[in-house]
Length: 132
Image 1: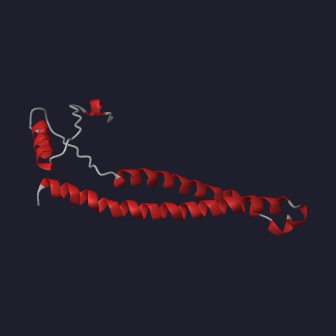
Image 2: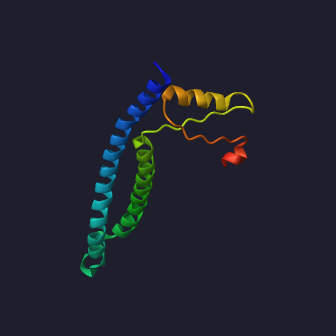
């Protein structure tokens, strides 16, 4: 299998992951939407003086349920970033090594074998790259 075929294979394997992420995000949206519709109704019931004794402690339960919903929203944001990454028709490849050991030559050979243009960024130190 040529390099171009391997790269294409990797990209094709990511597509079903993007579709699965879309399904999970839809489920999360349904849950959070249902919760957002339910919350005002619960607050209204809790604020009704005649039902306060019937629902003792319910306010604390509602307040505690907000945290998992916020966590779901954070997860949904993370899933969005993954979806964008898996939906791309490109692949990021990092080449790491000491100076003058053939990183540029390797990337040029890879580009030639894939018959596509590559955008290359070369960093000589972790600090240049932004790593700490």
